[in-house]
Length: 300
Image (cartoon, rainbow, N blue to C red; front, side, top):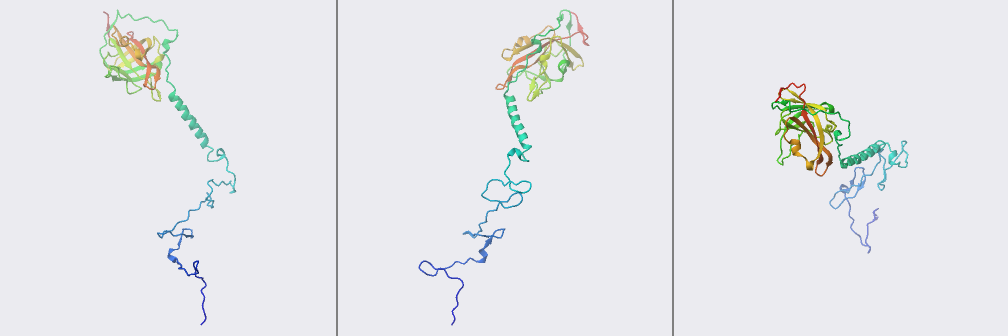
């Protein structure tokens, strides 16, 4: 009888004994999506090979390299150019630099103290000689009528009125609208006997407000107030004063008068960012002009 020999030698251990061979079935031979054999874990799940890295043109690159492969316009390998020479950053860098400069500029502006210049009337200005009105000869008898509009041509003010009152702490309210002026409802209306109180903002977050240029008024300047009864009363600036808010002369500003007057009040001085308030108040004193008025008056 002729002997047959296996082409595959059986494995033996160190003592020459045959050992059992574990044959993997074809069902357990796993391949990845590229057709390559992959190892099979204890749970029978294939251990996928890591995906190979490719450049922008689809060519394989080394997975050990963390640097981006750079090629010139002809596809040849080239040295990576500086950031400021790259096409994608040509316009991005100037914008980034301008943004950084803008952030620092606005941060500096926010921390910069806000200071409003002193009123022009307080400076050395050649003012025309004004003759004080003789209230002993004329007594205005304007009835009460709500103010509807304020016009100060010299400083470009043409705005409406809102009604304001006294707060719980005893101070006067301010209008919620920075472009409107408030009339204090506990005092007389413009044209009545006594001081009519008108309050307005000097600025607002991000810009100016209705009384920003109030400090430019000088004695002798005039302005007008429209009233609900259809009449228009004209006032003349008598004086402009600046008072610290910590020592505001309430009696002088709000006290009774023997004639029809008006007080235009706003903030001034230096703005305190912690207290959120200005250091001073600007007060414009005015009196009713009775010449060429379409209102009735009588002599005592």
